Image (cartoon, rainbow, N blue to C red; front, side, top):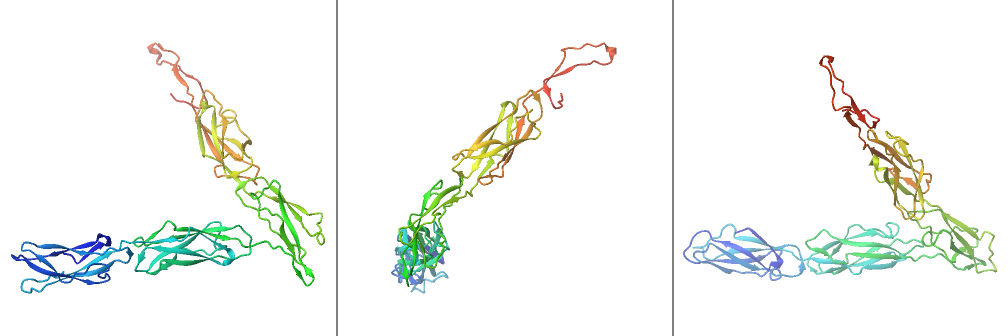
Length: 467
């Protein structure tokens, strides 16, 4: 009935429809056979060879099942042919659709994972080997992609990154060892790590296991040299360098040293030694700590007067202050308006920002109480402050009026202003003037020609009003 049929492998069979065109009052036979294509019998399906299909006199079609063999092997979609034939030329003929193609759709997946959730390697090894495993059989090559993501280790300084690098598993391969390059340096550093991740773009045949991400730790193998070297009667001398906390504390603010050996070769008169300062985003005061020299070689080494030095770490972070809103509105008789000032960024000290006001259509002191560089103090843990500005209440009818509130500071080292450093405050009028006739009645003689009525306004206003 069709030139092609498709079936998922795990259905277990495919049904082909054979039709008879023309009437008969006797039973007629047609033969059904199969031929291999990319699907092979008996691995992929159960072959037929001249299997007899009998049509009774009144039958015009027959449904015939061909067995599909179910396996757990990942493979490409495969096909084979079904063919009709006969040996009764007097009564049976074949139509144009005497051959059909049957496609067996793959419904299996191989699962790819890392063999371990973590790998460790010493830096000077130069590479780390990760093991990727394939769970499930396949009779075709399958690809999985390998990428890396920075952690405390960064590419290209610490390792060579990968981005969707293709790892190909041949049909019979269940695991692959892949090398990721570790970049060797002579820098003393903490152990650092990065991630390796698996991905794919072949959802029909490939799946990822739970271990599709692994953490790779690069172990530091560098040291500050300390030794005593003798060479042709000239030798190196060793000095020890240590640190002591002051207002700066290790390990928060810097990396401490404790009897770190500094070696002077015979011809060296000075040495430059780096002490690590730890970078943060916290606003703080300048802080200091001490560096001290010592030794254990009294016969050959003495300390000068400057055997202790003070190291000051200058703050280079800023907290940013802004209004929460570009505008605020308040009814006059509320008596005050509350503005919200926010601090973006952390600090371990108190910080000040100044709040001032500028007249607009509202004037101080008539309409509000002005501020001029009023100090607003944020404690270390405070991220916002609510500040009240006094609105002066009167009984005068007026238009809505506004004025500005502005932030400023004199501490450029620790304080910055955000884009919303000015806000507009609108004072809504809530007063009314009352209009009335002065009398409930007026009388006039007709020949006067007019009558004068007196309309009165109760209440003050600083604007014209109409009735």
